[in-house]
Image (cartoon, rainbow over all chains, first blue to last red; front, side, top):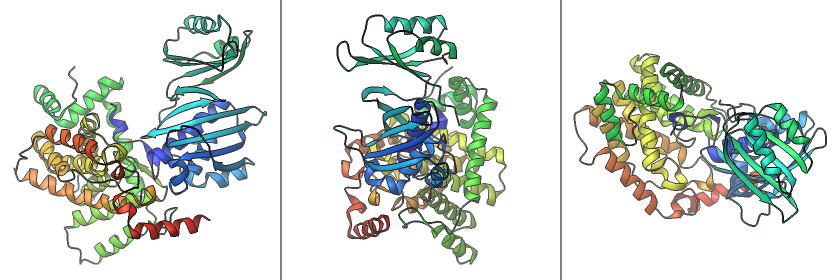
Length: 222
Length: 293
């Protein structure tokens, strides 16, 4: 265990799970969208819903959606800042069948009209898990470089992705495959030890049968 | 190089290398993270600076989102300034700083989780007040923080530093033990005295419930930071007098894990037991829900 998980992180209070973790969920969601958020529907579940307001969970999520880090002193005022920037916000309750007690469902629309829906879970100590993207189950922290590929459920797409990573000398830390049904839509989540070069991502986007490529850079320290 | 996952292993590494605890903690962290020892020291120095800044930025006018927290640090400052305080100038100042930091946290100001946000007042209060009252150097304070981190790492690996899994003993208890070790170090204690101080303070907090009103990091968390400070002073004083704990440090940490597992769920940050379900708590919650309507 790293000693700066014991003394640290530097964060805006009052809670590492309900505040710092919520900022991280918003931050990762914005990076997954890949552009400035213009509209956000923020739905809370469990303890996030019950005690979120007192912990500033709503403001923490909004701060993260604008690219703020857990130690950003503007987090208490993030909702006002978002309004000044013309970002439309709507808050409510998430209805989840089986959610982690600290879950948030975010429906985002970016400046180009791009849409993203994610469920993020705050696991404690500021660590998070992205549990769902666009209705498909996932399981990653956003702490490592992460590649998310939406594709048609056809033979060969996994090898295309792994071949590209091998070509770019990127080592795979974890890899998860999900699909909506046989021959339907599939999602690959690949956590890597190194950053993936831009041209590798661009190449994948042009491959037939690959519908959407999202790349999340490594979370910057501090 | 040898790793440490217990207090015994940490002391053995120190003995083999003829090192102080902070030096062994720094060396181990450098080996694990790939940073140089100098970079590890500098990183801890930034934690110290963030603590100092958070202490200086205390705002007596701020109130928490619930309206239930804020302003008590200022009351303590005024009482200390009156000269009628019961404790020594050092202990009085440390109590004041603990309240201020914990209130700042409740009011969404920037703090350093040490080891958690809810217990963020204890360690800064103990070391910053020491720097102010006893004229310790900044380097010594950073060394003391490395001591706290080493003790905290062993507790986290063998028990817990999360109220949801171990109760408040895991948060204020851990912070208090870590702070006691720092204080013994700053007072010139040797490695054995440092871990003895931590052991006394941890033992005294075993079994403490995590029962926050409304799930908020306010009642009783803020004032428990003060208790953590006083208990750290007691632990360090016992160790510096040469008194030894009948239970070893590692046995104490093991007990903390077992007690944490044995604690009912209603006393582990679920706000379904203890202080959280009292009539007083209900009145606070009614006020909060009116405020939020």
